[in-house]
Length: 123
Image (spheres, rainbow, N blue to C red):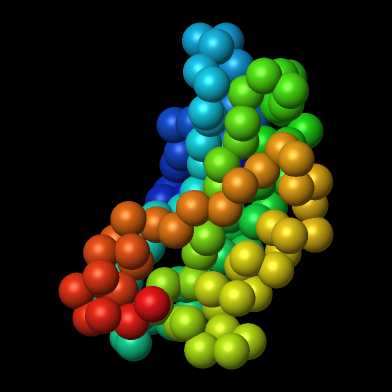
């Protein structure tokens, strides 16, 4: 797998990350996501669209690799930057996760988005 802006493969594939977390026996494990700074949202919306797509696709690979769904809870990151409008990227990201097995996955906001929403008072 290649990072969209990298010339060489990224160090960890989503399924490898899940296998490592399964192996160490973590109670809570995280799906790999593509990090995009919310500070670039208005200048690089296409990067958020791309990251939302990649994170959703990677979650599916994480589900397939997850060996212990009854003992290890899989969390995913809701993508979409600060696009919180009805039908926006965050809602689209969350909707794609809701189509998956709800017993295996719980959505989490990215810390940058949560921090930005706390500072701006927008919940």
